Amino acid sequence: MKRTTYAGLVNEDLIGQEVVLKGWVQKRRDLGGLIFIELRDREGIVQLVFSEEFGKDALAVADKLRGEYVVEARGKVVARADKEINPKMKTGKIEVDITEAKILAASKTPPFYIEDGINVSEDLKLKYRYLDLRRPEMQANILLRNRIIQSIHSFFDGEGFIDIETPTLTKSTPEGARDYLVPSRVYPGQFYALPQSPQQFKQMLMGAGFDKYYQIARCYRDEDLRGDRQPEFTQIDMEMSFADQEEIMDVTEGFIAKVMKDAMGKDVKLPFKRMDWDESMARFGTDQPDVRFGMELKDLSDIMKDVDFKVFSGAVKDGGQVKAIAVPGGAEKYSRKDLDQFAKYVERFCAKGLAWLKVTEDSFNGPIAKFFKDADLRAKILEKADAKPGDLLLFAADNSRIVADTLAYLRVEIAKEQNMIDESKFAFLWIVNWPLFHWDVDLKRYVAAHHPFTMPNEDDVHYLMNDDEDPHKAYAQSYDIILNGLELGGGSIRIHTRALQERMFKALGFTKESAEAQFGYFLNALDYGFPPHGGLAIGLDRFVRLLADRDNIRDVIAFPKNSKAVEPLTSAPSPVANKQLDDLGIFVADQDKKQ
Image 1 (tube, rainbow, N blue to C red):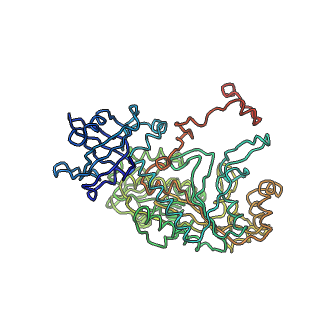
Image 2: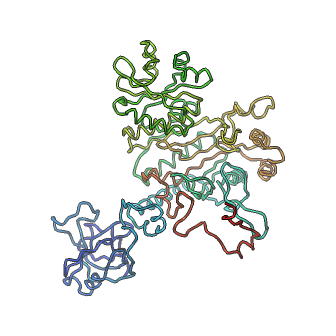
């Protein structure tokens, strides 16, 4: 039998017609001489009806069917009686009277129900991922991903971009995260690296004359995982020659608008808002702000520099800040115990505590209220913090990084708890004019804020080119695209001359010799007339996750790793045969003895 349509697409337009359907048994009800089967495929579920009236042999087949059996069936589409209509099913107004059926495959009892909202462990679902992917919500996620990818290809093809693949086996270079290394059998003791991004290759494509490149690229980073990270991930990658920052941002907005329309049926307003990095950090404490709600950070340092409360005045004296957020109606909503829990949590940001005040009609309440009895001082605090009676003021006093991290976390966490966020809204935002470098507190040195190929602002080039100036003061021609408080991706105008690129490496701590060893091939390429160019990459997995309204990117990847970078389905990573190791000249130390 040749399938004529999908189960989930059978509707009233097909009433009276014969259809052939193929799929899985979702549910079976035996009423004695009358059997109802809910048949499921990727498009949904439809009810099949078996009885001797329609087909005795088909009824005998239905008697053998159980959950997750694979079956094909032929029958006539009929309207359900009014009282039998199921408004919860897309196909709830019809059913199919089956005249012929055949079992294509039997099934063991699955380890969990094939339905949405199941409460089982993540590892169990990943171990049986092929079953987990049968669930309607998971199928919807993967189908959404497919629609997004189709829309991306359509947009870039229409704009004259060229889809070019870049190598998966390449040279290991320091780009921020650890590389996944692949040993070479042919050259013992030498290694390829899996690419963290196609960065240098796409830039060399610009030098090769392909002025508009794009790729849906696989990338790999050996780093600790979170809900929005995987060791292997996919990014929407593009690069353009002879284009400035605004042109690249315009193209990005164009493809995002097309994806939103094609995949979600939503129109987005263009252009997206722009915000300087400095402003974002000042107002929100983060470079990926959620602008769907207020409760912004307010700088009270000038007010607090002379107060008796030494935690505040001391922080300002030491060159730090005092900032606050005003939680609307928070005075009644949060108890001392709740605030103690917040204080405990923000210790992870190196905050020494959490100061707070509850605003009453004519005063403050709280452990530090005694320091703020002066009416004029209270008035200044309320005005600067944009607070009113009934609000809760939360303070952070320390260096700018600790203050930003602490209040940025509290702002978002409280907004979620108090349902202050319009979850139906898609708030796109550009963060522009980034610092070229930032100080890494763990490495105790400056690193590239984006990557070492980023062009500084034209007015800041002198910071890199003159030996008597501090290159770390420079700002960059770079830009990140934010959606609902999460970074979708980012890009920059690239350095396209050897002299400036060498200066960039020097500012990052490379010697001339080490830069040549790591990037000599790329520096040599820049000697041969590279055009001005720039580009951007967006994380496809994260984009799909946000559009699918899922909490974890594992839900939108067909075969992801778990939080420990393990694939429970295949048990990867796993040991390999000694012969394979011998071929590669690799000796694996005994881990038990090592411990």
